[in-house]
Length: 242
Image (cartoon, rainbow, N blue to C red; front, side):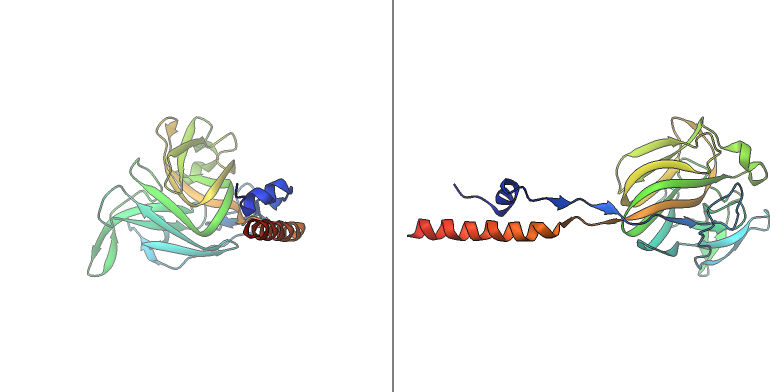
């Protein structure tokens, strides 16, 4: 019976270092330090000025916003459940963060037609796409009612996350008003949505805590043992030919 390299490795007790996480990083999408948000912040991602004269919200909008992270480039996009590009990512400072703004394109420019810049309907989504896999461990949120930030989000309110296009998982904003929410998700793409089981609450994504995932590599001793296994395979093949 033929034995594969992997079976010989198993028989020899070869061990491999499993995929692990590098040092954790925190990326903030807001200038606020309300209730001791982490001081490690990256604010600003380009985009065009995004201001609606009907509101006091000022920030930038873009079909996508990009950030440099320890896991490579992060691209953020928005959706509104429609086939046409009617939703842009919004990023504001202060006690906002990332949201979704809807509108239309006219003469090559995006025109805002949305008075609520937060993620505020079941159709709206925010998608964070990392260049490589990460372990997502913490999320930071602000409520759309920014003057009442510490009272809006609580344990009866929730949000959803879909990892790498999978099914939606629903989480509560917890007992610390969304600052932060701890969880354990591993993937490359994370899509945030509106709650459908817990109470729905409008929110901005204020920041994420994550660590890059390093690929699995063999331990140094594994190479030597694997070499012995390959020698054994060669000797066995020679005997059969003889």
